Length: 267
Length: 107
Image (cartoon, rainbow over all chains, first blue to last red; front, side):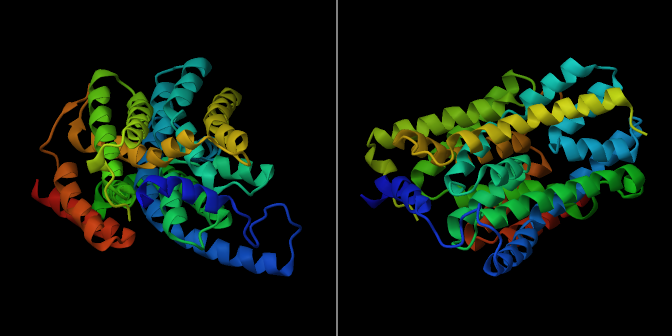
């Protein structure tokens, strides 16, 4: 019985006003200490992402530098776009002579998946103002989405301020690592210390955190299998968004179909 | 120096990347969402994380093809078990990295 209503209960408790959680207050002394804690914990919480960005950011910097981009251009792209795979694709398209429309259109389709991530995060960001939301949106990536969502679920103290700081710490790390890659990434041997696997390991662990019951397990399997099948049929990364929509929809249908074996325990 | 054409391409990329990140946050916040939609959103993280990671483990090449004999997949199994048993993000990331590094030495 409890399992069937878990999502609903969760949503309602999250919607209730909590002290010190209103983003539009004028900053008071109490607010300042709240922010100090948030900055420290949010920045520290970003470490797995920063580690992963060290590998990918340096790699991006090296590739962009080899394709003829200077560190200033690399930094500008990391600042304005802030999306790993789209930046790799843009660099190869631009160095092949592609123009404004194809490059921008490709970035749009490659990054459309963030639509699902922001939708999923909104449940936890119900009490903050337009300005903070807009600032938060800029930092929504695969990595920050997955990490923030895991923290929101299990950590009572994890609030929008910490999530916002985590987003922007990761962004600073991305800018710094890509620019550094443009300067001296070519001196670092590829594959050092298995750092290339940091983000994969993080995603595997965060996926495990999401497997809170049989139904989530089934959804993950549907998502993984359909992503593989679609990725083999269609080039590009549209498989991520299609497979996620298919799997989540299947999850809702299964949940409502009252299949008894799926109503297992949820922890 | 930055070329003006380059600046506008990057700015365009930035805008089209930002908008899908921003619209759901401002459109859906402070709103009572229908229950089926909340249930649907509740499944999105498990779905999307699996859709992100699984193809990286079992496909390779351009055009993509299935490939099960890759260090990425081999290392993913102990990493997955580590995450299940310890529930520790830090431990899992470090173990995954070390195993991948060792796998790189062996393969």
